[in-house]
Length: 216
Ligand code: 6GU
Image (cartoon, rainbow, N blue to C red; front, side, top):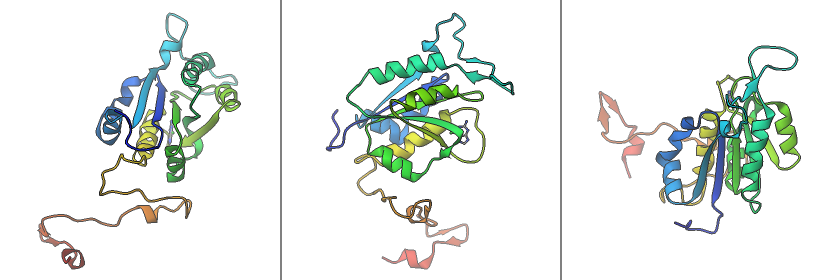
């Protein structure tokens, strides 16, 4: 079904070694936007871009240190293939990493105006830095973090960023809802976030809904 407005359909590609981790994108607001054709979500298994029979995606870090680093070759092949599939769009490569800049409503608002997000979900200690360096010469690369804590991989961030962006697309939220522009007051969310909310019944376990909300 075509979208009901002039904005281009947003394409979202997500590359991961745990494609099943992205299953929630079939549900709720994002799932409905997919069904309505407002977004085109494609999940890719990085291991499909490996060449060896063990489907290896990582190796030990140069310089030592704990853990493993993701190999550049599978990422290069995966991203080349995705980028080559549509020369007419302008992609942003989103690389979730705890060392990235903090993801904000400002990023979400900007990316909702674009037409293509590609998520490179790393695991282990991250992706060989040359991948970001190489693709940074061809397209916009944004390394973003959800906050000051460490997750095991980028998949949860890809889910969070996708939901934050998709709910801003015209026609995705219901008619009664509207999206507030975040272009002013950078870094401050107060104007976007509601105070305490109440619904029926007016008295519940001895607790009343504030009188001022009951009239009108
Ligand atoms: Cl985007 N990735 C990982 N691995 N950990 C995080 C994060 C991202 N944001 C906060 N912690």
